[in-house]
Length: 458
Image (tube, rainbow, N blue to C red; front, side):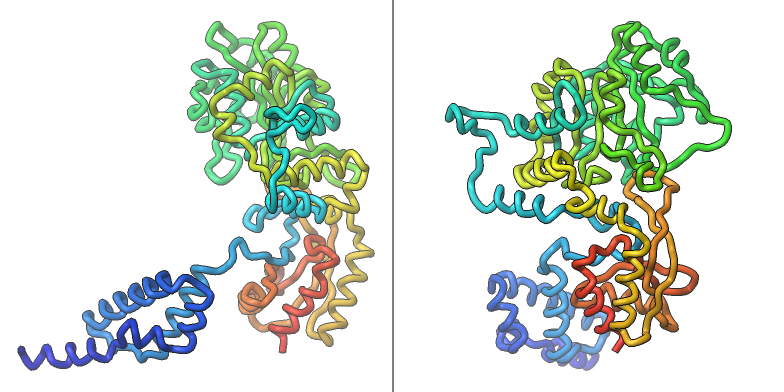
């Protein structure tokens, strides 16, 4: 063996064995919490990487460093996820933070549905097989006035199902201004392609008329589709046909009209100082054949896609093979059912978090901010700001709000420390200050927010 090989061999001998590492106290604790075989595999993975680094000339790390690395990987890789965070960004429907938080009642309903058995697909009256859609679809119909309804696992799935069931192999006429990407790669042309239908664009980027749709209809037309521009606005010299105008065109040629309204807002948003948002019940009143919307946006429920409309079209969706692939799970179904009951009981402002946040007054937010700032002993101050709905709903709309401003040399450091706190908090930087917008923090979260702030401001 050459003399140049000896130092490298000695370095390899300094790397502890798997058995030695397993005897370390910190590793023993991990072994008590997790499967020992998985812990051993993780140790081998770290040691393999360590040997590779040593072979490349790096100094072998001590056993303490190796153990620390294993503990950090285990705590990150095997942690509970998703992790609860406090949303102080001021974005109510924050897509990265899970969109609409659920009401306590909806959470309890989902828990009851999952911790034991349920009548998910059993008719208790007859003892025979039932439909998981029966109860929730009736609630939806009661709220929006439609003939029928079906619920799937999200609105993208709902739209694909609708197009596949109604217009597979046929042309679907869409305004050029609505052949858009709504977010996360969800592009209307791609959705049509996946459903087996063909995109037929009409009009121009800024102006489309009902006559453009009428002129494009031929024997190959499967549907007319209108898509609400939920996360952007085209302003200025613009025109879009009303949904009632498209229905008239569709009725004249016996072509179904599909309307994607996006956010699932079934209350009048203008009551809260926001712009008018298309409502499913208005589409139903306009006699559209199918209307699509999300459950986890302004409806304030779990992730789900809802389709309402004419009974014979809903039946086509229900019997399509994709309906099973896209069906809603029992926990989301239970949470959605309870969310809809809040609307029927007239308690959205007191029960549904999204509408609690939207309806909160600046005065109430100011009182909460004063309490939090006093709790921090002068290390923060109250500032005026504005919140937004977000989540592909009401683009450009803002709500007056109140925030806590943290005094710090580095706002980025404050943000990082809060994200790593025992109760993780996500805020935003505004005018070189780190602020925590209270409109998106529920009142019951205030004590935990204070604890996290005290943790990083010591």
